[in-house]
Amino acid sequence: MDFSIQLSAYFPDKSYGGAQVYKDMLEQAVLADRAGYESVCLTEHHLINILMQPAPLQMAVKIADATKHVKIMTAVVVLPIHDMRTYAGQVIVTDMLTDGRLMLGVGRGAYAFEMDRLGVPLDTSREKFDESLNVLMALLSEEEVSWDGKYYKFAPLTVMPRPANGKGPPLMMAVLVPEAIYHCAKRGFHIQTTPLSGDYQHMVNQVDAYNRGKAELGDAGEHLTLSLSRVGFLARNETDKREKILQADSYYSRFDNVFTGPGVVENGMIEPLPRKQTADQLGEGLLICEKQEMIDKLGPYSELGVDRIILNINFGAGQEETLESIQRFAEEVMPHFAGQSAHRQSVDA
Image (cartoon, rainbow, N blue to C red):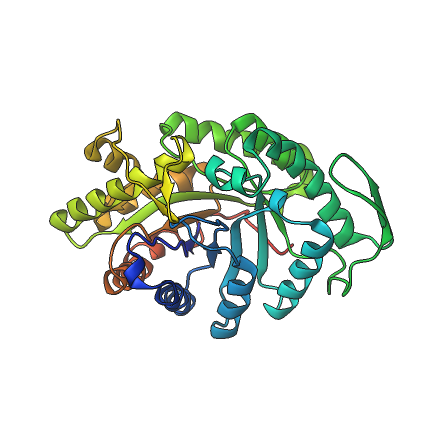
């Protein structure tokens, strides 16, 4: 089972400065590369101070220039807010400038506040995402593409430059519902998912759906991978664990506001709102723990066949603590899961 660090920008205090946030993210990426993580992840969001990354492709190029081996995954870019005729070219150039290390995770958007203000409300974003994805795939793989759909109508055109490999970077689909995971895997997409606050059985259902879809492809699906994202942090001791869980609870008081709540945002800052779930209940479902508990919690993921765990570690801890956790996780936890996915092949296949 491989591991990835989600370089998610959490910005609860404007005085810290956006430039410092991105310097921190780059430093985390460099450490992840040196420590042996398989990949790092960038999440596209606009107008808000959680997961604050309006330019993930630009950041991917910056990370590639500062690292040697780590793959750079978007988790995810929001297709409905872009024009695929220009975005396809940006993806191709990014893939070239990252030396083929880009993995393009795509999604429809998640926050009503953000999507409404960008002119693609969530109740229409699924339909626009589906068409955008089809347009993007055609533009990456074909020349002289024309389109006559609901959201795109254009005469024949060829995006330049052409992808170095003829098809662009690997595409990864962000999906939460098990039945949708099945259909996306069946279509030949790598999958990114998360159980969020769901229980263990929900996660099992997600993995099972992926495995069913992949199995129906036979040999053509052997290269596919399943990535599962969790908030996680390797705590030094029980006191540190408790502190980090409380930080995560504060983080979720903002996350829930825009993900499932009313979307109360002022001057770009998401208001923290009371949560129904207690901090202790939240902690039970997160990967915030000491070494042995971390290994025990990760074991079921590996046994089920999850290919990649994406750790979201940026939820309130300082940079030095975060770097320490990244390093210790690599040294104390990752070796327990090396080589356990015997049939996994490279995502580049």
